[in-house]
Amino acid sequence: MSWQKENILILVKAAPNWSTKYKEYEICTAGINENDEWRRLYPFPEDIMLKKDIKLWDRIEVETAVPSADPRPESRKINAESIKKIDYIDNRDERRKFLENVMEPSLEIPMKEKRTMTVIKPIINNFTIKQKIPEVIQIALDGKPFKRSPYGDLGLYYNWQCPKPCRYCRDRSHLTQCLDWGAHVLYRRYQDEKEAITKVKQMCYYKMKYDLDTWFALGTHSRRPWKKWMIVGLLWMKKKPSQVS
Image (cartoon, rainbow, N blue to C red; front, side, top):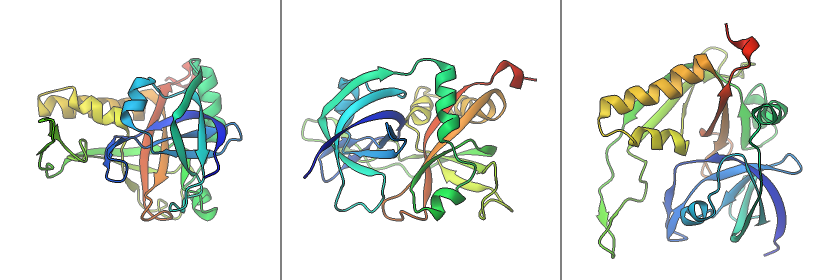
């Protein structure tokens, strides 16, 4: 396998899932490299993410290679041990400028170009939370409870439209599942279910729709690479003073 070094600005950290191939929790992580190309990075172990304290807006150096089994053009295998943090974008204006340069007006564009990742500043119409059938908890060899999908019992869904409506949202909204790790963690901060629902709706719907500038990082599933889009990351910041009425 031929490795090459890339500098990648991290914009996506989706909820972790157990990898049967790598036998560890992996985090769907993605960002944009120095050539303004999207990179979907895997395997990105949760323990490496936590050990190296990788956050959104960190710029990392990492060895990547083109995978043989993933047809999505943005996907790259990584040497997780090679990850180095080299910078962090803290300035809000710099973040905004970056997102405005890479965002697209419609899903129509990446779909036509057979790309499977993009950033869109959506028109948010609604947000729903659905409880799913809980996964049966297994007991690992060390005696600790184990779930393959520790966040899979909760479904977060946005109804939204592209700023420039695509063929799918001209007459009706997209209904897209949100896998953003931070949104799922927020729900689990509260033991009371009603309070958790209230807090998540307040942040992920009311604030993101009315008080904040919000961008969706969207990606597709490997099993339906040109069809099934998911919100893999939420990016937001306060509106500019001139935008606030």
